[in-house]
Length: 210
Image (cartoon, rainbow, N blue to C red; front, side):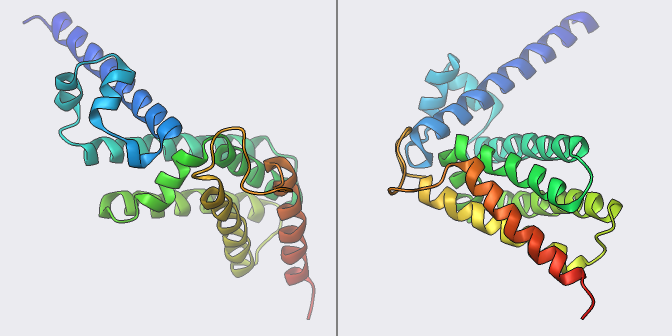
C-alpha cells in the first residue's frame, strides 16, 4: 500500500471519527444522556453501527471523547474571550462569566452530562478537574497581569462564578428547549452581569487595606 493511500485512509478515518463525535454531541444535546445510545449516534452520523464501534469500542469511550472535545472547545473560547477583554478586573471577570454562561445556556443538557452525569467515570472526572485547573489558571493569569494578586480571592471568585452557573445547568438540564424552569428565570446575559457585579465587588473588597 502506497504512502498516499495510507494517508488518504487515515484522513478518511479522522473525518469519520469527527463526524461521529459531532453526532454524539447532537444526540446528548437534543435527547439527553439518558437516551444516549450508540445506535442513536449511528443514525445521527449516517455511519453504520459497525463503523461507530470500529472507532469507539464502547459507549464509555465515545462519551470520554465527547467530554474532551466539548471541554477543549470551551477552554479555547475562554482563552479567546480573555485575550480580547478590556483591561481591569470587571472586564476580565465579565468576559469569563459571559462566555461560560452562554455556553451552558445554549446546551444545558450537554453540560449537565459534562459536569454532573459523568462524575462516576474516573477518566471523565479527571478531565473535568483538568478543565477547571486550565480555565481558572487562565483567569488568574489575566487578573494578575492587571494587578489582582490575591490568590485566595481569585480562587473563591472562580468558585462563586462556576458553582452558580452549574446550578443553572442543573435547573435547565431537563427543561425542554424554549422553556424555563420557573417564571422570572433570568436570561444568561442578565445573570452573568449580576454575577460579575457581585464577584468584582468581592475581589475589590479583599484588596482594600484592613
